[in-house]
Length: 118
Image (tube, rainbow, N blue to C red; front, side, top):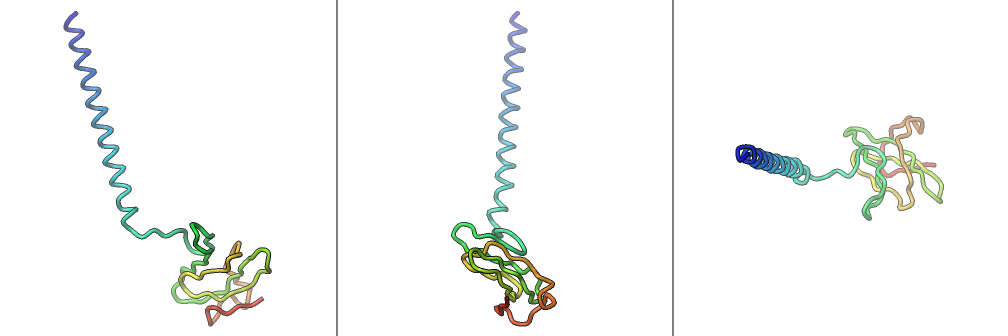
């Protein structure tokens, strides 16, 4: 009877050690995964329309590096319009509710970022 009780206690201790080791490994992996993400600058969203977040204005991110393009900016309650944007981030109006590349407007390409049209 004592032998069975001793084996049961050993099995319980072994299970507890394995559980503790698994928890420690999971914690180490979680820290290893989080560290690189916080070390690099975070990009809020991606190319194209980016809605306002955390007090930032909505913007359009043009990811090409060698062209200027026409985008259509949707606003509410004011009317929509076209805007020429260059590579990188272009902040939009406070009432902008959407923006997209418009290849049909004047051929899609433009010369002077900041120009606007109907």
